[in-house]
Amino acid sequence: MRMPTRTQVAIIGAGPSGLLLGQLLYKAGIEAVILERQTGDYVLSRIRAGVLEQVCIDLMDEAGVGDRMHREGLVHSGFDLLFNGERHRVDLSRLTGGSHVMVYGQTELTRDLMEARHAAGLPTVYQAHDVQVHDFDTDHPRVTYRTAEGQLHTLHCDFIAGCDGFHGVCRASVPRNAIQEFEKVYPFGWLGLLSDTPPVHDELIYINSPRGFALCSQRSKTRSRYYLQVPLTDRIEEWTDAAFWQELKLRLDEEAAAQLVTGPSIEKSIAPLRSFVTEPMRFGRLFLAGDAAHIVPPTGAKGLNLATTDVKYLSTALIEHYQEHSNAGINAYSARCLRRIWKAERFSWWFTSIMHRFPEDSTITAKLQHAELDYLMHSDAGLRTIAENYVGLPLDFAQPKA
Image (cartoon, rainbow, N blue to C red; front, side, top):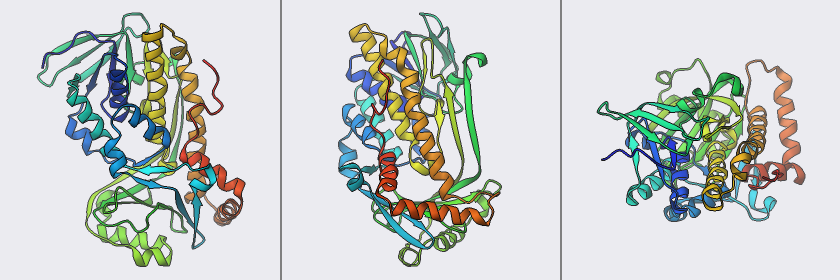
């Protein structure tokens, strides 16, 4: 493949954020090259979230890649909360006037975007090593990288989109005095297990248990994803499949424990939990999006959905720049994103706080958690607050004008 030397937008990272941005720009007639340090197969091997808000669903449709998602995705109009041994349903559709979420694995969403990009013959450079971003504080930014064969290339561009994740080069390239980072690291992780077994319930179950948090999730009607709160000191080698299933049953209610179908794991991993936000998210002609700018605990299923919101704001801003010769969206990008990000961070922090056991908790904490959950489950106002945050706030929710 002949390596491009000039494009309008250089996108760093071929995860869902970078691929979705590339597809939206392509639909608007804007050129973009995507650089990814891993192989395509490696990107698809990463097991990630699978609960999509309406904003994400709509963006996939806008990008022209939503057909398989609608065929195979599972529409969920509610979820269960289990605490004090009893399950309570949060009816998302009733509480939000018909809104819902969709279960569709991030891997599948990424595959759809990859295939659409390949079919359109759009340039994506995999195994782009030693990526560096240059001169993004000028009108002539550029990106340098080495191919898998070791050849050095320079890509000149108008803008750089940093969609390269928490450990990526884009945020790390910003001068330290130009950026502020906020972080909270949680003293536990999630042990996740993926299995080809039918889900224990047709909707998700979030569990507040004396033994720690648990989540019963799914990827399809025949593939399940389960999580257990575990200490950060635990190692994946210490958890056999049998030990995982036994511990999950101990955290479930009797009915769910009896219905749980177990089987060999396809994948097991332990993920740490953190809240992280970068301010601002624009530095001249360099923009941060997705995990490069923010991380949320997975409790509220906000990570992928926040990333797609960033992409919506960024794609709109870039389209306005090229088609309307307006920089209003570019200038407002950071403020618009952060206003929504902090609301999602707040919800994820709150939901994590009331559903997990913390090492420093005293005996009163569980009682207070149960009292709060009991109040919420018997208050329409409380339920509505959970529901409207879970399905995702509207894109223009309390947004300042550009």
